[in-house]
Image (cartoon, rainbow over all chains, first blue to last red):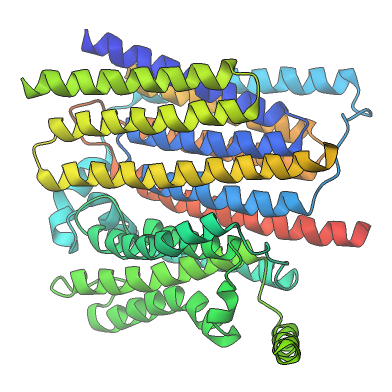
Length: 324
Length: 95
Length: 92
C-alpha cells in the first residue's frame, strides 16, 4: 500500500519535472523561460529531498531557485528585445535534431539499464560510512567533501574562482537596481541578519548534519544579493582589496593546510587525526567566505568602479550642502 | 489521538492549498489571483505546519516549523504586495 | 531498483531535452537556460544511482560530487552571462 502511494508520488513528480524541462527548453520568450527555470530549480530541490539528499536540497533551494534566478533576472533586464522564431532553421534540421535526440536517449537508457542490472552492489558508500567516524566529522557528505576527496573540493573551488576571474575580466560592476519599495526594504532589514546567522549555523551544523561550506556560502551570498536588490550598496561595505582577499582566502587556506600536512604527514591534505575536526572547520569557514564573495561578485557583474563611486559620493555631498 | 489530530490538520491545510491553486488557475485577473494564492497558501501552510509540529516529538523541531511558517508568510505577503504594486504601476499610463 | 531506474531515466530524458533545446535555440540566453537544464539532468541521474531504497542511507560520494557540481554550474552560468553581455556590447 505504502509502496504504491510512494510510486504514484514519484510518477506525479517526474511528470511535472519532464513537463517543466520541456517548457523551459522550448519557450521562445525570455521572461517565460527564466520563470520556468526558477520553478524547475525549486522542483529539483523537492526531488533531492525525495532521493534522500538533504544537502543537495538545501544547496539547490538557495542556488537553483534563489541565486541563479537573481542572476538571470539581472541579465534579463539588459535584454529587452523579443527574439523571433528562428526562421532560418529548416524543417530538415529540426527533425534531424529530434531524431538524434531520441536515438541518444535510447542509447543512454540502454546504458543505464545495463549499469543498474549488472551492478554487483559494491559501493563506495560502505567504505565511506565505515570510515566517517575517523574523518573528524560525523556527516558522511562533509567527510567526503573535506576529507576523503578534499583534493576534488580544492580544485572545484579553483574552478569557481576562475569563473569569477572571467566575470571580473569582462568589465566592471553593472548598474544596481534602484531603491526598493519601502515594505521590501523593511523586510530585508530583518531578513538579512537572519540569513547571515543561518549561514553561520549551516557552516557549524555541517559537521554532523546536512549543511556545510557550500550551503553556508550560498546563503551568505543570498543575503548580500537580497540587500543589493533593495538598493543597499553592498560593494561600498567592502573595498576592492578586501574583496580580493575574500575571493582567494578559501583556496589559500585550503592549499596552505594541504602543504603543512604534506610536511607533517607526508601526503598532501592528509590530516592528522586529532587535528582533523579543527582543520575541516577552518577550511570550511574560509571556503564559505570565498564562495559568498564569488557568488556576490558574480551577481554584481564585476568589481565596483572606485573613481565613479567617489565622484557620485562627492556629488551627493554637494547637493546636500546646496539644499541645506 | 494526537496523530489523528495532526493528520486532520494537514488535511485541512492541503484543502486550503487546493483552493488556492484552483483560484490561481480559474480567477480572471492578476489581483484576485494574488488574493486567492497568498491567503489560501498562508492559512494552508499554517495548518500543515501545525500538523507536522504535532507529529514531531522534539519541541525544537516543532518551533522550527513555526519559524518556517512565519518566514514564508512574510515572504509571500511582501512578494504579492510587490507584484500587485508593479502591476498597478504598469497599468496607470493606460488608464 | 525501480525508483533508481525511474529517476535515472527521467534524468536522462531531461538531459536530452536540454541538449535538444540548446541545439535548436538561436537566442543565447535561452540556449544557456537549456544547457543548464541539460546539466541538471546529469545531476538527477547521478543522484538517482546514489539512491539505495528507503532503508539504506544513500551513497554520499555522488552527493558530494553533485553538491560541488551545483555551485560550479551557477558560477559557469554567471560567467556565460558576463561573456554574453560583453559580446552584445560589441554588437551594439
